[in-house]
Length: 484
View 1 (cartoon, rainbow, N blue to C red):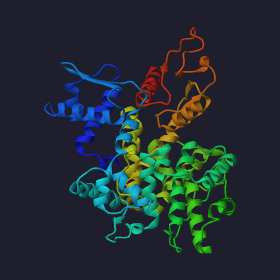
View 2 (cartoon, rainbow, N blue to C red):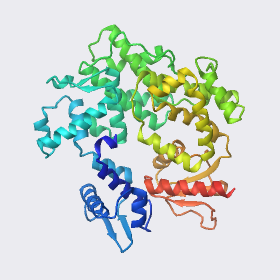
View 3 (tube, rainbow, N blue to C red):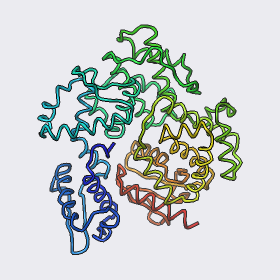
């Protein structure tokens, strides 16, 4: 989404900011700035001025120090602030997000008034509106020429909901309430009860589900319904919760909604689909998965043949489950661009797991020879990345785990950090231990309780982890891995 909002020069400025924040106190030489970021020597000074403007706007001029010497540029930020938080704070003031928020709440009153609200010229507003149109095109949506604010976006209802989900999740994440501007207490109660019933549900899965459900319910209340004859992918049943039981539980969200029986049935099936595909299922719930169904055998055979491995029955069940999840998600929603975080993730694997990447490219080429995959990859550019994640999960699960001891001030912070660490695709299998003595790596925001024990791989962090902390954690893991 960022490339639709930020200009090319702004993207370079944020790339410069990212590099400086990851250099600790060593700074960055002008030679490296030219080479790694693509800035010319004549535009570096402009980028520094623009970066200073961004920092003043987001955190205030007294909260950082940006200075240069004869050959280096340095940046120090005095508060715990990650690069992503900095960038999100800057983007949050953009016309792009303002436009979509106003359209979502059905209060867009005309470009002239909205440009006045953002203190920009009408001509600049028209240019910004082009970015919004381009973003919608990638979801097969368009801006209607009608004047009615409640029908400004034309296209399939499920795609409109999916687009808003992508915007809110990528930009607002845990602060999604800033976009919705109010709470839905009934939805909160429903999801709290679901999490109590299924304690294996990650907080990240709950967050995604809450955002998408909120969008769906808001759209229903405003009369934007899914077509009654809408067809769902053939497989999306959750192994631990049937549609019948789910319907009984979710009824509470539809008490005040005036829908026909068929409209209600379609909307509940949509919420069930989201529950089945957004929530990760642990291995013990997958016993009844049929690995011979659909195209799973082709995918499994490709992994075994090219990867030179024999998969266990448990691994095959997981692959089949994840494969089906990927297929049905892309059958339901489509987008024509690759999400930035998937590209970043692939870059990380390329740098640190080149053997895995080489194997995966061979697998992807083989899959593309099969007509059904060739067509799917062409239509859904994100699908190969998700298939790659399945292969990575199997490969990393076979490695000797890295035993990690994590120590944080707060138990809540610790549990969230443990979940994030496991979910962060760090190209390694993580196993948490309860004592420093058993650990390969120690990650701590506290002084160690026993300084006589000096682990070989120790990483001190702030809480919550910022970009620099994650970089230090990854580097510590790499050092441990390459030492074996």
